[in-house]
Length: 171
Image 1 (cartoon, rainbow, N blue to C red):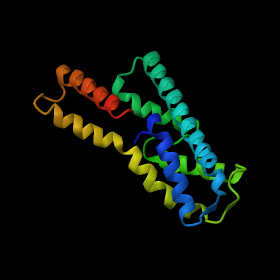
Image 2: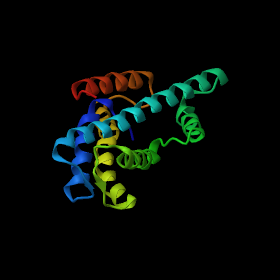
Image 3: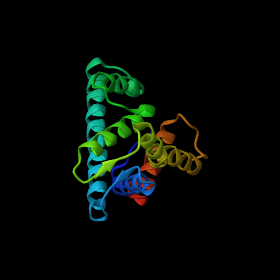
Image 4: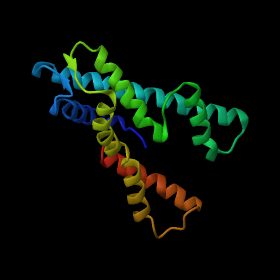
């Protein structure tokens, strides 16, 4: 699961609407844009820290001369040290950060719902946008199905098609 920075404004608006639609939080109409910007800032910070953790994991792999396929494992260890959610834990981590922000921003008048209810409303929105990786992977594999997986040609073509898809979808 991955959060793409190009989709952050859309995700923030969807989350703000989802939380205000049923009255879980009270926001004045003129402050709706500000609440969406507050949510955006949480999401942008998540992306920034995730990149930082990924770079740290790459540095560790290089310094210990580990194989590159260990990246996810090392990244999970670095994230755990920093008490940061990656992978499947990312959605809960982001939800917690947004809830914390809702209680501290001056743009939210009142929070009426319990934390677990807020998480229940935010998870589907985040999951929908963060599962885009799996959709992209399936589409790329469909486009290069004529190549044998695991070969260097397959790897190169996979990266090329993935970058092309990301560029066309503005991710």
